[in-house]
Image (cartoon, rainbow, N blue to C red; front, side, top):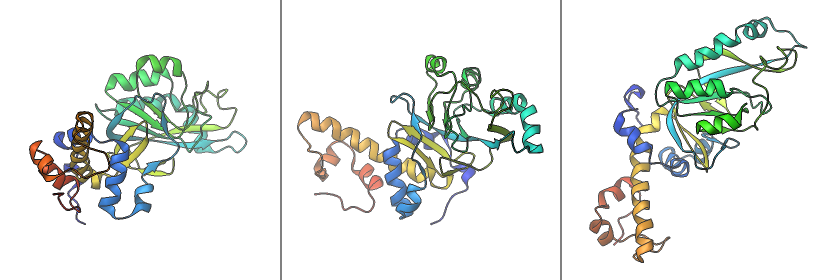
Length: 268
């Protein structure tokens, strides 16, 4: 399989189609593209869920790396990062561009909040469309009022990383100040500008190399399935049966079918 230059992938048209695509559809299309269910499954965050089932996000990742901190095992690097915490958190906000999803790789520390309401307010003001983390979050009652989409593995917590954990006197995690570096979040490799698709069904990471194909095929599938929903209500279609060529032609969906299901014969 050949790939286009990743820098060309996230065009306005590609993102328009990709925003139609559910995490479930993206998951299925990735298997078709790669021919590898193991690779497909490696792109799904199994433990990260939206705090509100109505949340839907789709955007390029802005990655944030964390490291462990343990005062019982002093590490000069971690000690320095503890002192630099405010500066390194500010780097996250300053790196935000409109439409990004902030991915905070928190080492699975569900007991430590990566951000609080103040930070989320700043991310939202800069144009971020949500946060994905394998950690927890702080100040959720206030973040909910912002209607800022949060997808997390942890629970709401009164602490934010090690900085707020009694001034570093207990173990926690610290942001390194490294932004847009490859990270592993909930077991999934995420690179800057890989696209994050999240909804009630879960979170899928679409590698930049596959974005165009997922947008094209996934968008076509969603258009066809939206038509099928309407036809079910009208009594013209039964789920599980293929649409006929006549139906596809009647509703202008024949070309969409060819894009969505290139490996299937056109039903007669």
